[in-house]
Length: 347
Length: 244
Image (cartoon, rainbow over all chains, first blue to last red; front, side, top):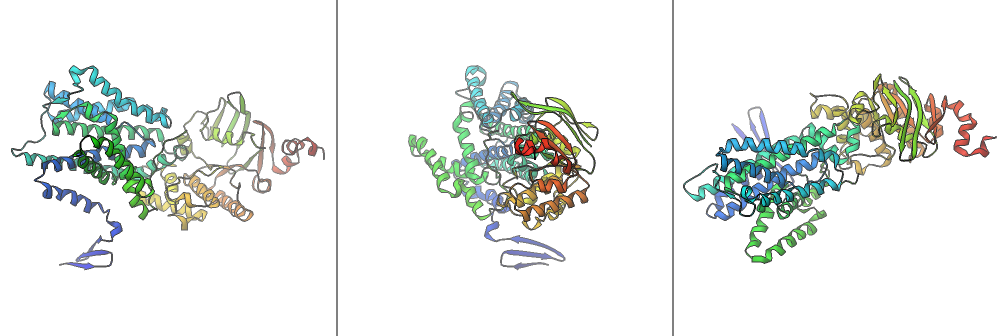
């Protein structure tokens, strides 16, 4: 039979000659399984409040954008200020193809991936050419340009009102079921990204990514093919972000460039990355939840929230340890792990 | 092994290296000396592909590496250390060496634990195994230099370029470092091109010395002969001392 044994810091389960250990010491509570199970049972408690479920769905999507962004920061060693560009590209591709040509979500997913891959491949030389701040400036301007395009060709993109009436991924008769289903779908999307990125970061490629993030030139001297890595880790996160756009189109069934392309949205994502933990992947989730809860609770105060929301964010960065948000809290406990820095490079 | 033929490099109007040719044979330790600003480090950067030569050619083991990417040069078997140590600051010592193990050669099937085992061998070799979990930014200068050496050895080089390894070390530490480099040369069968200001070490450790001044090669030969050459004394100490 299975024998359980309680030790000081762990539970040991024994079954015949097999042993499995479960660490319960508080400093290991980042244990992802606990976090995932909390997220999985969360809707049971709030299923009667659809707006909270919608808020959590948004939080999951924020995290699903922040996680690839973190991966990109690692792999290219640069800070991308416009991750929402591919959200817009992916979203518009899916929405337009679905509306005008009646493509099913599966087909638009393939189209989204293709379009994002092609465009990001075309733009990927910026990671090699643009040094330091210029990369951030270029990536900052691209989504804003795209937003202008959605206004100029308003009859296609409907920049101000947005596209409506795309087909849904799932539909249930009860509205509550819809909310719960979309919460779980977004959760699975986010978790898939998290586990995928985590797998990369913990593999032998992760070591090379860390080296590129630390010092590109030295990494190159030690035989890391930096150019290949940079192109790959620009294209892959771009595709992942594009898929989030596709997901938004087919769950919320509206898509407007005004919502996702402006600087406001970018600020939110970057704040999640900073508060939740720079290029630390797990941090993106508490960061995203915190930001969307703060955003949602301040929205009730009326127009004042445009002023309060940034103040709260600044306070978070200033008052949490090391100026690094929630990540600082965690890092204080474990200073020896490898955590990359946010670099704005001069060379 | 390494053949450098009439290599020149200009930065704007400044000729950092002009028409320098020399070679390094297999198993040889060659010193590269010269006063400050003579172009020694530029020469090293040209060899490992950080700068591309304006004219002339550099070949290694019969392969032309003049215009080659540094990563490929590293895979061919040239590895270097830096004058100012450039560790991966937020990475542990072991992780820094791991990068070299995984990328120094094409090792598509090497797993991370295997690589860590090999990396810890190199760390043990330079005497830093006890510091394997220390972040590189917490190491002192001697340890940083040894970490750089371990990192360079981990890429399995045939030619090791050392850029002022002894700078800033006290006599005890530099004698340790010297022992380390000698045993590395024996154990891994590498050739060394060594930039150094400490003449005592150059005299003892190298078989041949190349002297640069204002980007030009002014002498080449065994260290004993070179140091008694009046031209070299003039370059280092000025014309007044050369007469005696």
